[in-house]
Image (cartoon, rainbow, N blue to C red; front, side):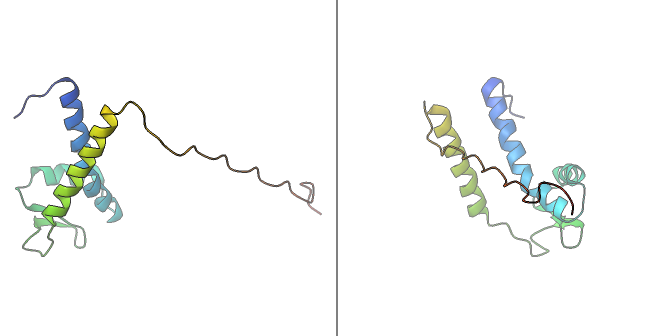
Length: 113
C-alpha cells in the first residue's frame, strides 16, 4: 500500500470519493443503499461489480456490462488536469450569480374573498 501524507493524501482521498460517486448514484437509482454497495464492490475481485438491472454482483464483462476504459481514463485525466489548473492559477474568472427578482405581491391583498 502506498503511504501518502499531507496534500497528497488529501488529493488521493478526493479521487477515491470521486471514483465511488457514480457507483453510489447507480445504487441509489436502483433503490439500494449506496454505502453498502460500495463496500461490497470494494471487496470483490477486479472486473466484478453490481449489475443494477438485476441487483446481483458478479463478473460484469461476462454479464455484458462493459465500461469503456479509455473514456473513463480520459475523464479522470481531464478532471485532474482542470483541478491542477485551479490549484496553480492565482485567479479564476466566473459568472457573477444574478439575484432572482422578487415575487409579485398577491393582487387580492392576501385575503380570501
